Image 1: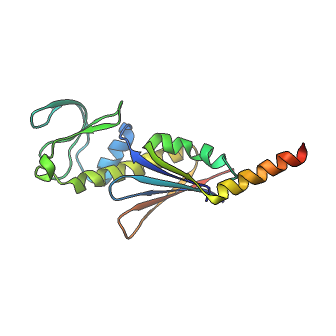
Image 2 (image 1 turned 180 degrees about the vertical axis):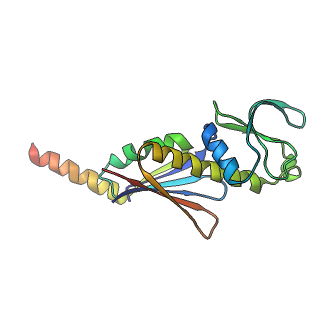
Image 3 (image 1 turned 120 degrees about the vertical axis):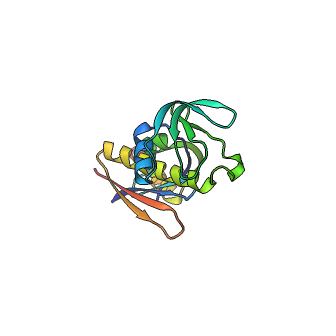
Length: 64
Length: 120
């Protein structure tokens, strides 16, 4: 299941995480929330993001 | 998990301001020119609990103006609580606009977790 989890801390800052998306799809899916809430202070791409990017890359290479 | 973003909240949405004040049982926000201690600001005035002057939100810039005299004229905690509630309301409104469901949960450390299920 694709979910976006937002944890709003007691001082109002938000931490947004995406789950279950393929590669850069997660960035597209959560962009509307990021834009609505305010300014990014940090962004981290996790292992899963890179893993699925590499898989996509491999698939492209195999097709060529 | 695929990416993690930290966001500093900007107050730019009047509907979410209204919903946040309602949920916190604060007076309805009003638009106009507001006097702070030695300043005047134009925007949406939010009257926090036990604050001498309102907090003024300029929704075009996302900026908040206030004078709480380093906590003597109003506790930072009240402002933090408003910002937290605003962020939750704003995210819920946006998620619903996209047709997603949003489920809210209070965490033991005082945070609020919002789980948005994305269809498709």
